[in-house]
Length: 165
Image (tube, rainbow, N blue to C red; front, top):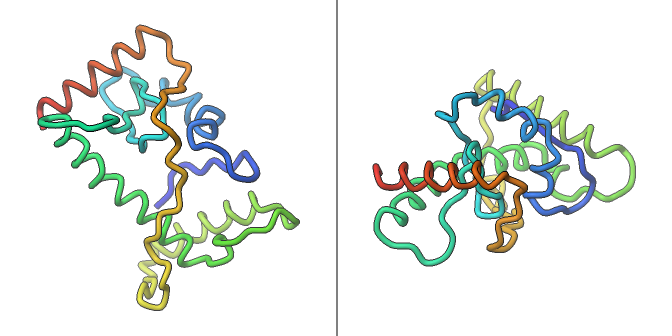
């Protein structure tokens, strides 16, 4: 089920740039007050107190365990995107011509939630592309606009979680 859908930009755009323009990004500090909670993002997203991407580069020990568990959780998210694309195949190739594709995409997400709530299954065997992940992974540069103390807190938070895994 999708609880937040942001479709504000047309065309291919770096995930971090879309994130920084989303309503969720603006409201997340209020929604996750107290800094006890966070959401996970892939390596394209900037580290912040509320958004934890995996550690970058070659990691070992507790950092590697963190990345492994992070990836296992992220698989559920990627599967949700795959299910929507499998269920609504129009989302696979959207030309840059009308209809307004942001409306079509949002409608597909809403319809997906309705189908999921009704336990309507998707026959994955009929879809050879099911589960393909074509997300742009970005590069290894953090490009968030976090204040230095927020970034230091985010680094400490992610490191603490990694040590306890």
